[in-house]
Amino acid sequence: MTTTDPVRGPRSPRPTEDLGIVDGLVQLSFLVQGILGRAADGYDLTIVQIRLLGVLRDREPGMSQLARLLGLDKSSATGLIDRAARRGLVTRNAVPGDRRAATVALTDTGRRIAEEIAAEVDRQLNQAVSELTDTGRKRLSLLASRVVRHEAAGLGLDPGNS
Amino acid sequence: MTTTDPVRGPRSPRPTEDLGIVDGLVQLSFLVQGILGRAADGYDLTIVQIRLLGVLRDREPGMSQLARLLGLDKSSATGLIDRAARRGLVTRNAVPGDRRAATVALTDTGRRIAEEIAAEVDRQLNQAVSELTDTGRKRLSLLASRVVRHEAAGLGLDPGNS
DNA sequence: TATTGTTATACTCTATAACTATA
DNA sequence: TATAGTTATAGAGTATAACAATA
Image (cartoon, rainbow over all chains, first blue to last red; front, side, top):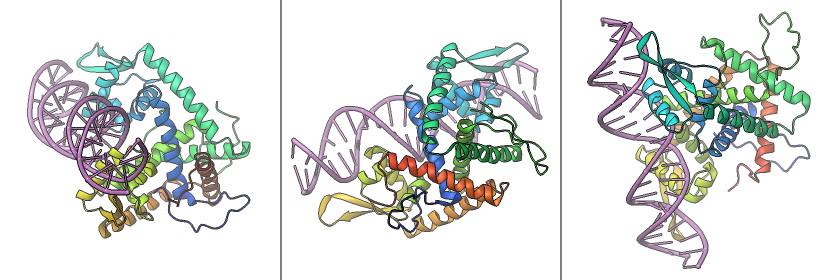
């Protein structure tokens, strides 16, 4: 997926060869995931952990709900939260009405780190699109948003996560 | 940083809210990775494995070179190739001049699966952008390509070479 | 009975450090 | 000594199946 081999010609003065919508999006996704991964690495975390922090920035879900938000099995969520809690990023809180249930929330440390990482990702991603014109960035933002919204709507999901 | 609200034309039932360049790209990357993951899952593979198949479609690298291409430690590549070989997707071939070295190549099965998955990803990704206009898809393709190219250049990578 | 969450188990993926064999 | 690759080990992440406790 990294490359299909487009005919490689001599260097054009203004290359910007079109990779096509498929390769373009696939490679862009790996680029973005790379940025996320390196940002996470700086805090000795993983992409999944920072995604968790992102999701918890404006929610306090139960375990099953959290698993659904992240697209995981609930047993996977158990381990994920175990590890995040061991690092002091999140806590499990009891639910008054239901003795089976527990909600997950960020700790102060978790929230601070979530914000620092978000700022770092912001920097790196803006750096990555710095070659585009203002109009280009604006268009890219809108096109990406439209695709994401369309897909979310198709899945019956509403709010965006991080 | 939601930007100014562009007046939506009569074609849009609802305004496509702009997620901003950062959230738009991050969420789009998860969407694309999700498509890749589900495509891989259909063959009982992982994203890493199909990425491996993609890389090997037009290369026959040594282990160290392969690790560099995938951004892994060479020991990680060993396990990755072990598992892929066990599934009959790739083979290790001896290098005549150097008894330490080995190159990795797709088997016929591996190549067939690589192509089937590529076709499936193509379908799903085109489906995902089906709501955009032709112009929108064209622009998205070009913008993504430009960002990817810029980043690759910054890393001194030249896709398609050694 | 259904739901919420955990445990047991097995596998993939990854890195670090130490190792073998060759160059 | 340096390079190519593997092994040993440890940890994260994931799913399935079985389980306990509560509703």
